Image (cartoon, rainbow, N blue to C red):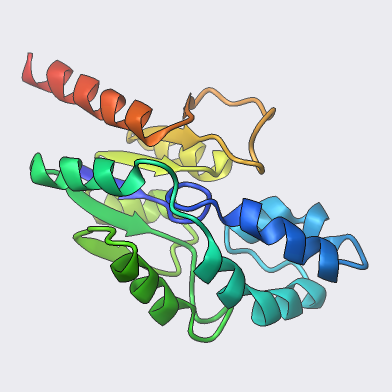
Length: 189
């Protein structure tokens, strides 16, 4: 299977690391108000653009990989699955972000087959790359992916907790691994 995986708040705990910097910088309340849009790669105003330029690299460089993510990804790849990171990260939002992301994945020994930056329309990107399963923390992206017939899993995060959706939620990478195994069993039955 081709498995699409978002990076921020799916592979890494981006929001948790950003909270301190947001509180330090966010005098207007814009960042907190638009955090979900920011995590999807949207830039609603100049204050947010400045915040992203000033703080994105250090916040994301210091974000922690979620527990078991590297091991689960390694096992999935060893099982014949292709791992394709589909992220809205782009140098348009913050110069050097793409190179930093590649360095981060290498440093943290995160295996993958392909990475697609600047993916703002993830449903379209999933279709173009023949993704079988998409994992993201964005309800918007997961619902759009499921609307075109691709299975999605919503990774619980600060930006989606408590919001209603019909997309199946997961809390851990080990749970995702079990879900992938179940899909494989059904396909092979």
